[in-house]
Image 1: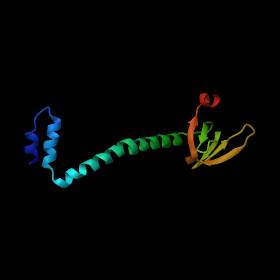
Image 2: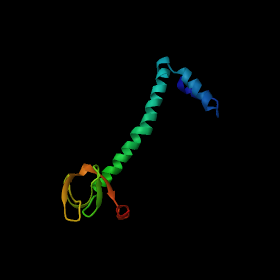
Image 3: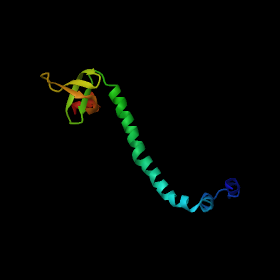
Image 4: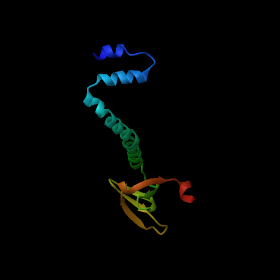
Length: 117
């Protein structure tokens, strides 16, 4: 039935084709189409960008090395001294104050140009 319907569609008139296809669907399916559309919109506007952001953050964490300037989620800036598993030791002041932070608390790697401004 569907192939018969698709072969009868006029070429170049996608809106008419959509109405013909929607009228061939059962009533329950056509009532769900707006909800499915909303779910797709939420996926592409909210979920997918967040997944990309999370992936970039994970890549940034895996590329950390000693000597990198970082900013934590609490706003503390420092230089990485050592990395052991999930713990990062940073120097936060010129007089050698050291802190240990969890790797997941690192918000960003700061470049030299950004730290001098």
